Length: 123
Image: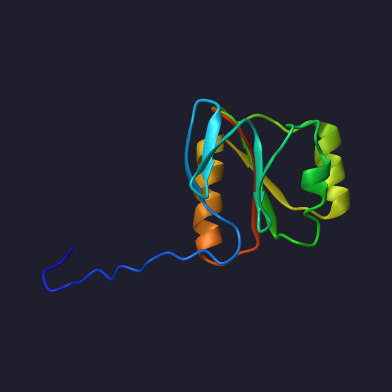
């Protein structure tokens, strides 16, 4: 930083949903609790998710979120075509990325007050 320049620090606050505080092999930490397995995190809180075959939690987000971030584990993977079609039919916008990136992106947009949700597979 240039001499005489100051950096302003802002405390991050989250309105509804809780951010992902951490993750590791097979788990995520949300709201101070370690939760095993895949999760769906939205304004209603974290819920266990059954993976790509468990479409209902994702489809129920229609009209509640602007974007759903889908974390596919360590690597980026394609969503099954049937799931993609049903999300599109329901009007649920989604972005697919690896799980660490999905968690970070979810947290940043959540801190901005955006209507976002996260469906994430463990690393």
